[in-house]
Image (cartoon, rainbow, N blue to C red; front, side, top):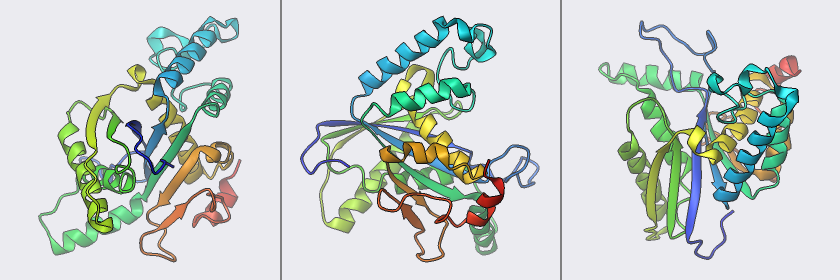
Length: 282
């Protein structure tokens, strides 16, 4: 967590796992079909020393590319647009992932995530369509809502926040993301009767040119493997660096969902999908 004193400038890195799409262009549902995700996850990585993290990741990649053990591996070829250019957990070899995970544990990182079950989002869309027939769902709507949720307690202690978002598509959504951040801060100020006016900077970045975004990807991959496949060990391994995971659609007890923290780790036994996990655990 941030200390109670001013922290000067803080760097946050934001990426997603899964996608916010519910429908194909022909109107048919995509949830859980043809490789489309069941869950949409937005993750934030608070990086104390981003320059050091970037240097360590670059050094590791150079070592791997120079290692004869990896010669001939397609993901290591510069033209493959994969590990040779940037670490990406989905594309990296298991041997590579193990080294990246170990590297991440040497750094001061704090990961936060918001998780939406797209089936619940679909229910919301259908109910809203009943009230407002002209309403049409836009994936950016879900993304911006989750930005506001993810940042609601994270923009009030430093003097300046630099928020680096992984670039999504070709359109520049910097203004919309800035509006979502300002909305999150305004709600926090109203709730606690504060007047936080930290400077906010938004940068849309390519992960290949912004190494800390590659670190976010690894945390997101570990979390996605849990929610989509029931694989526990990856997120358990990284849990010491996890601050909060908010399962926004587990409303069995509270309408706002469930917060998993240091004191309440995300485990198969606690999660609402425990029955499914038992049959998919590898």
